[in-house]
Length: 241
Image (cartoon, rainbow, N blue to C red; front, side):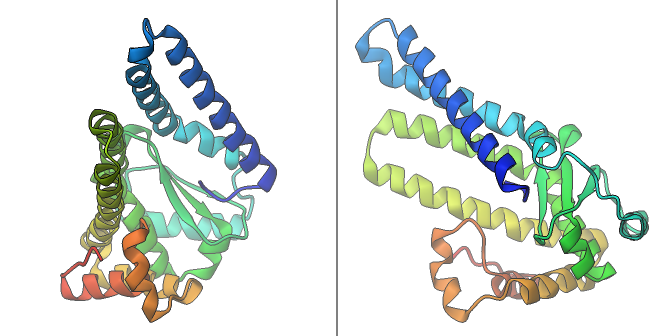
């Protein structure tokens, strides 16, 4: 979820909870026989997943309804965008958090969101690297891939009804997310050069420092640590754990 005012975040979470609960209730009521309820609940889960991912651009507009009015910052961002290949709209909005996010299932519906806090903190090469990273997520359809795997995971969990399979599938999902991060870093290097991509990672590591032991718990997260990403980009060898 992109950074926003706490009230808007709560409203959005409650909205999705209500929608998800409503879809589940309708699907359960439509089951012709109690034996079909698990199947209908799985269908409800797939419908909710699609709605969640497909509505992300609308949710992002709700979370960040007003573009930044900082003229110098907008002009600086425009200059950076003019110096690199970007296909997706880039939206700058005011927020103290230092984050970049991409939303949208398809390439033609994707949008990149940058907080003013992040743009102020990064150098121009670092900003190019961050934007190129997000654009690589779009170009390689990583969000669509995440949705596709999540859908298969939902179906597989229903079909097997096995806790071990569920756990294995979830760990594979996290590994896939980490792989997409490595791929986006490599894509950023191809778009704007390895120097800018590495500048982005080093500057982000200054913002979000990690300790050496963090890599050993990265298997339980959707993101590799920044030192792991830096090493992978420098050596061309990624690690999923």
